[in-house]
Image (cartoon, rainbow, N blue to C red; front, top):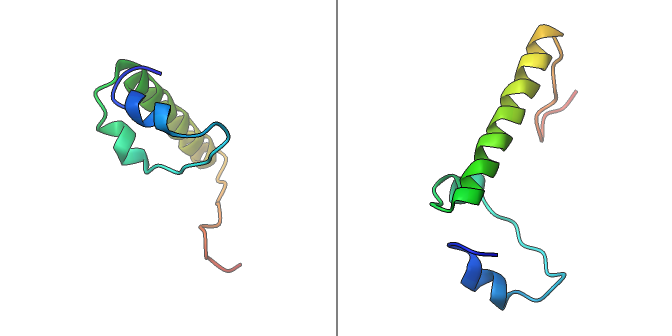
Length: 65
């Protein structure tokens, strides 16, 4: 891994799991990460459009039926 997260990547043991807020990546200057951010945003935009076209409602986390 190169870029802003390179040092962090070298300090993390293989197999260890971490969770990141998407905003961390949105504010990252690394070109590869920015390409992934654009891809994820496009996938989300397409997902929302498909839901709207097909009148599909999704249950939000914590919401009861």
